[in-house]
Image (cartoon, rainbow, N blue to C red; front, top):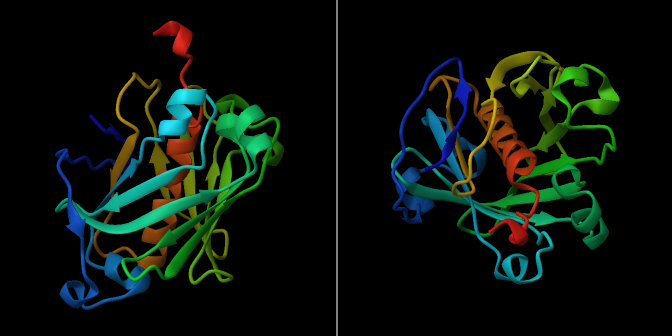
Length: 218
């Protein structure tokens, strides 16, 4: 089962089987324009064999789907070995999202913050989990910032002017399950904000699934 997150308090269930990536000839759009008519996204991390064997986080890879289970994009993390070994879920990374033509269309960046992670003090910049989203790479289109809360994860999705457009609220806890997240959003939302929402899903995955499970507890 995928862990669900809510944008504007809307929810939808998803299946497990996924079809092949959608050709641009079928969508008629390229880049983030293919997000224009979507009202939901599903992000699934690809399991790493080396991570399972050695117990050290590998550079993450993701498949990204629409609500019809059609694959839209793939995403690839770039990060240092030391960050993955010692900082795990708080690590600094660059995530490149490519379309089916292998064109890089979205860049998600996260800086390392040693104090991040606690929802109680997330209103402080030094403690807030945050990513920036660029599309095309080099052009900032928005940010995702953690807001302070008493218990649940709360993320603000902001445009390039730092104006909060949407809020994503996560669960109070995560049970063991597949490395997947999904969310819904208004269909008429700007494609750029939908791309930033995708960045929020990526951040959520790193927050909850970025740490390699302890094999001694199996």
